[in-house]
Image (cartoon, rainbow, N blue to C red; front, side, top):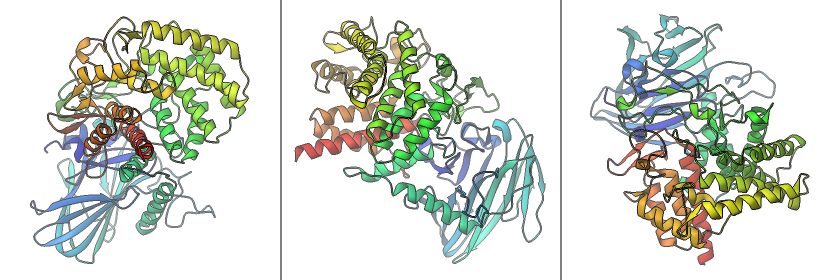
Length: 609
C-alpha cells in the first residue's frame, strides 16, 4: 500500500479518542478507548501489516470528494464511478445518557466501556460494489488477535481478542484471507448498508449492537449544539469554526484534558528521527487553547480545564510537569515502538514523551495568563484555584535562576531563553494584577519586586543590537519572540519588536513561511532539520495585523489557510518545497494560532473603518 500523504487524512472523533481516515477510504490510525491508548490500526506508521480497515469501490477509476456534514465530525465521502454514485458516511458515536438513566438506542457515556466507529454506505444512483479489508493489530501492532466468527448467518459478526482488548465488527460478512478478513458489498440506489466496529474490554461481554440511526442523530446534535455556542465575526469565519471544532475534538469530554495532537511520531523531518508523541496535555498548549476558546464565548471548557489542572498538579507543586496524560497521569515514559516501522520509514516511532521531565519556565506564565483570562471572562476563582496560583508563583520564584529547555523542548543544553524569561515576568505580573485589580490576597510587594527584577534582566540580556534574541549570549532570533507583545511586556510596535520581526523575516522564512529557529545553530541538540512551523507563521500574521501591516497580514493569512486540507485540517509543519503537510495532525497549536490570527485580522479591519 502506498503511503498516504498526511494531508490525505480526515479526523473522526467521539471526544475521547479519534480515528484517521485516508482519502482512499482506509482507517489507518485508531487507538481505543483514548487518544493515548495503544493502537488497533497502525498503518499510518508503517503499512497494512500494522493494521487498517479499508472500504473503497471495486472500480479503481471511481473518484472521491469529502466533506464534514455541517459543524460535526460526521465525514461524508461521495464516490462517483462508471456505474453509480454512492456516499459513505463515517462517524464515531458520542453516546449520551438519557434522563431516565437507561439508554434508548444509544448507550450511556458513563458506566459502559465501548468505543464505536460506524461506516454507512448509501446508494445515490446506479449501483456500486465496495471492497472491505480488515486487519486488526492490537497494542501498537505487537499483538495479532484471536479472531472468530461469532454472529449468525443473518447477522454476521467477527470478534477479535488480544490481552485486555477486544473488538466486535458487525455488517456484511467477512472471510479470512491470510492475516486479514475480506468482503464485498453491493449497494444500489436507495439502499443503505451499515458497518460497525466496537472496541470493548476483553473481560466484558461484547456490547449490544448500536441503533445506528439514533447514534448518528445524537452525535450530530452533540457537535452542532457545541458549535452553536461559537461567537465569531470577521474574516475566515469557516476556518475559525472548523479550527475551534478540531480543538474541541482534541479535548477529552470526560476529563477536560486537551491533547496537543491526535497522533504520535509523524515526522518533522521525513526519514529522520524528529518523531514525537503528541497525544498528551501540554500545559502551554492547553492554556493557549483555552484562551482561544474563551475569546469565542466557550467558557465551559475553561472551567473544565481549570478543574483538570487542579487535579493534575495536586500534591507537591514542586513536582509540576510541563505535560500530563489526558486524565492527569504523570508517568509518560518515552520508549521506542519497534513494531511500527514509522511513517515513510521515519524511525523511531515513540510512545510517551521525555519532555515531561524537562523544566520549561514559560509554563508558569502560560498557566497564570490563562487563569487571569478566565477571571476576566467571568469565571470566578475558587479557593483552590487561587491557592494553586500562589503556590505556582512560589515555585517559579525558587527557580528564577535556573536555565530551562524553552518552549521548543530543546534536547541540548538548557539556556536562559528570552521567551521563557518574559513568561516568568508575565506570571508575576498576573499575580500582582490579581491582587491590585481583582482583590485577591498575596505577597504583593515581593511579587512586584520579582517582576521588576525580571524586566531589568530581560532588557539587559534578552536584547542585542536593538532586538530581542533567542537566549542570553546569542544574537540568534526565535519565532517564540513574536509572542512577547501578547503578554503586555511591550507593545507590538515597540522598536525592539519591529527590529526582531525584521530579523525573523531575514533569517527564519522558508518558502514564505516561518521556521521556529535555525536548526543549524545547534541549540536543540538534535540531528537533521525541520520545516516551516505553521503556528509561527500565524503569529507573524498577528504581528503584522496589530502593527498596521494589513495587506501583508491578509496575504500571509490567505496562503496559510489555503494549506488546510479538504476538510480543514492542519498538521504541525509545512514543507513549501514538497508542498505537503509535515508532523503530527491535527495540531492544536496550528489551529489555535489560526484562530488568534483571524481575531487579529478582524480587529485590524475594524480599526481601518
